[in-house]
Structure formats: structure tokens, C-alpha cells
Image (tube, rainbow, N blue to C red; front, side, top):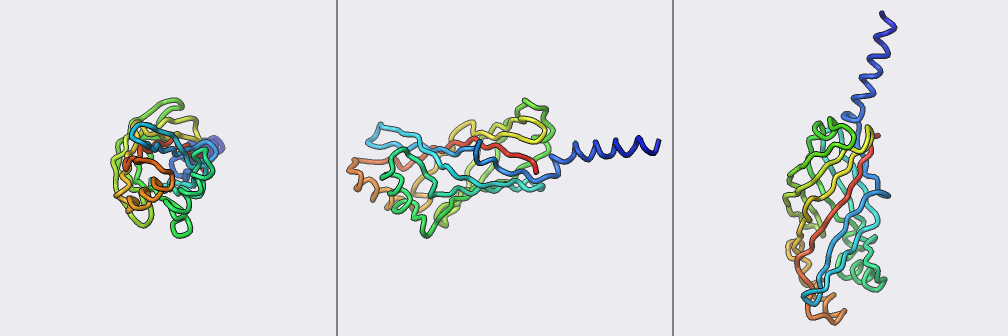
Length: 193
């Protein structure tokens, strides 16, 4: 009897691990993308290539976006975004933070999904703003789950003090206008450790 209890305790401990463990962002499988609209009607999708993130066992989520990793498909535009818009020398990262209740996500069976509506904070160039995010969490397997935006998060350039920087980019590119609203989408995969 004594010997049969030990394996049961070990099994229960293993099952509880994903709830108690910290969850780390899988940079290779995750992405944050954004849409820019120029000249009133030309929209393009861009992304960031390097992300770091973690959700601690209390549900506090933090994601860092390396602004140097911006990728638009046009090297000169990438350089201008890094140097003149984001000013990566002073502000190398953007940050996203939120508080999650992990239990409903970790209780999902593999393949099951859960819609989440929660506030999150975005910090860019020392300016921080809160947004309401509509997300979909999917349990991939016992060690991984995915979170995607159900609707884009629409950031306003002026909220982060970037209106003048955007106007400078517009002049450099010789464009009549660039939209001040920037829709942002995400596909984030977290792995338990």
C-alpha cells in the first residue's frame, strides 16, 4: 500500500506542474505584426522578429519587443523606423504587460479554446497606455498554449508622443499622409518550464 501511494503523488505533482510552472514565450513560433496605411489607402503588414516573454506562476504576463527587429521588407524603411521613429538608441524595447488567471487556461484539454477579455498595458518610449484586448487561448498540449488576438489592438501614434516622428517619416518618404492609427495583432505561444 505504501509503495502505491508514491507513484500517485508523483503523478499528481507532474499534472500540477503546468499550473505551478512559469510559462515562457516561444520566440520562434510567436509573432507580433502591425499594419501601416499610407497615402490614404495603401496598407502593408509588418512584424517584429524578436520577442521575449514570460508568465509567472501568479499569472503576471510580460512581453518585450525588440524594436531593432522591425521587419517591413524594405531595408531603408526598417532603418528609418529604427533610428527616426522608434529611436532605438534611447528606447530599444516596447513592453506589453497583463494579469491573467492561468487556471482556466491550464484546465483546458488539448485542442480546447477559451475567449479572454482583459486589460493590458503597452509601454513605448516611456509612455504607457491601457487597452482592452479580446484574445483566444488554445491549449496545444500539456506543456504549451497559444494566445491570439481575436481583434487587432488599435494603437494611436499620438498616445505615445510619436506624431512628430511619424510626420518626419512621411516627409522622408515623400508621402501625402500616414495613418495615425496602427492595428496590431499577435500570435503568442507559451511553453511551461
